[in-house]
Image 1 (cartoon, protein in one colour):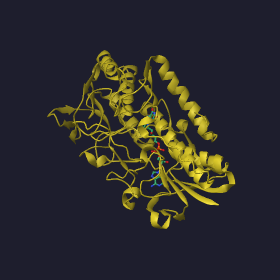
Image 2 (cartoon, rainbow, N blue to C red):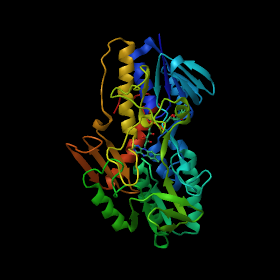
Image 3 (cartoon, helix red, strand yellow):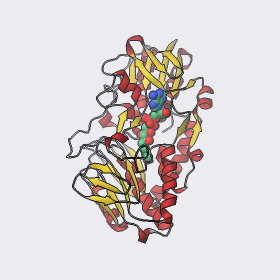
Image 4 (tube, rainbow, N blue to C red):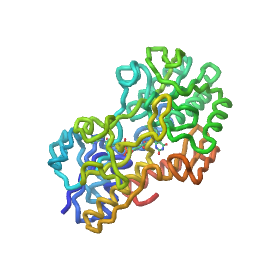
Length: 400
Ligand SMILES: Cc1cc2nc3c(=O)[nH]c(=O)nc-3n(C[C@H](O)[C@H](O)[C@H](O)COP(=O)(O)OP(=O)(O)OC[C@H]3O[C@@H](n4cnc5c(N)ncnc54)[C@H](O)[C@@H]3O)c2cc1C
């Protein structure tokens, strides 16, 4: 029986493990090892600071869901991958594999900028449940004594969509709290233009973002690196110094420490894969989701990364799982899908509005792209959150 280890219990890891089980049934012994014991619907973390979601509304425990479906679950952190021995060392012991699928997502690189918080720094983040709760505590303090707000993403960041969603949501939250006239809102980004999103923009995303920023009184500063952050000031590479009372800045992502320590990733710790999502150097190691190495196709004045969204992570996981399953079943058809040919589908929430966008490819040139702005996009995101949690809680990874 083939031994398959999946590292990571989120969008990519759970999708892959469930797909593998469905395809291989009792022909494989599948184990998911995850550092976190809950699945969290990360896209809804933007609402946690304002009390619009509680962590328990957007998460569930992984172990019972997987074990009910015959998949083993180990709550542990992988610390080292030893490809020569087909072994993974974890905080709960050493595990062997015939096939390994790495879906460990990112480590957050707060050390990129001096003073970048929340750990050993001053700004907030919304990238994890704990960060979002901390950002909420700071928000509650802020509305009692408002001042300038700065939201943004650093150089080398890739998750720009979350920063945009947060700036629009905070603008809406400030209106709801009755303090909008007392606060200025500035958006700071390394992107060469507003609405670039790390994918060169989609359709008229630049014009649309500029239009909404103007309408809502949000100042956008593009093409800048953040050099330093102090308790009340953000220093930019263009010489500007922004005073702030509340700031949320998305950090750059790195591959996780276990990959960086194992020497199987690129210089940032992401896994280099071919179009089947197999490691370019190891025949029985696959990767999916944020753990995969992707380069921004055209260099930008300030370096930026490419977003690997939840949807893209799932697509990659399906291809990787399909290819592992075909090797176990010896049907040996290699399914190929270039990352740039994934058709992105995303809803960007703006508080009480939103934009749904669909495109034929991640990068230009694209055959089609559609952007639907409107209040209903907000409700699409609310509905999708509930649908996705239901789908994963019930192990229906085969559903869209
Ligand atoms: C604030 C925010 C908002 C977002 N909004 C959207 C959105 O609206 N739409 C969208 O499509 N995408 C959105 N994204 C992106 C989306 O969250 C990611 O694409 C998705 O989480 C990637 O899934 P993943 O499985 O690759 O990695 P992750 O979700 O990061 O999961 C990694 C998993 O690996 C585990 N792990 C990590 N290290 C180890 C280790 N050493 N050993 C064992 N396990 C480990 C973790 O515990 C976790 O279970 C958002 C991201 C953020 C931060």
